[in-house]
Image 1 (cartoon, rainbow, N blue to C red):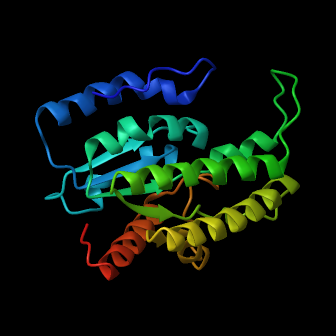
Image 2 (spheres, one colour):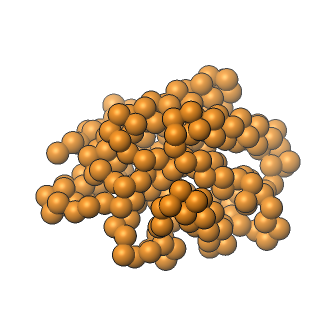
Length: 224
């Protein structure tokens, strides 16, 4: 039974660690066959998966609000690999970007854009390699767009980050023989508001994402 423990710094990933350890143990002890694990941050955690996908599948949600790729990398073994899912749907990266902003409470400057991008891509690549070594199929999902990115400089930087990271994710998925799921362009075409705050999908956003995921997986002969 793998448990990643807690981080030495304040990490939102710790908030659900005990819950997920208990749930993982129940799945393992009951020797259940897991079909899908959705792995990511708040966009995944808030996704009511039973409302969108085939309930005959065992679909596990391992999203954690506020999670960053360096924490996701550490918990990937516990929350995905040891559950041996048929497929892992992974959506990560946007929380790392927000480290570009100064921290008022810690009186610290924001991190450099290039350093953040390198860390994110390195961490996701390590997750991909780990999945490959364990013969776990990945559906690597693009970040979703903020429809109001022109508002300020931070949001413009976020759009640049989304475009650059999505390009890298698509390339890595192709290189390692995994599936790339393009939520970004599907949502970008939508004229109706699909988020509640520019980051988190509303019901329309999740329905579009569900449709894109289903259609993408079906092309590979996988039904969810």
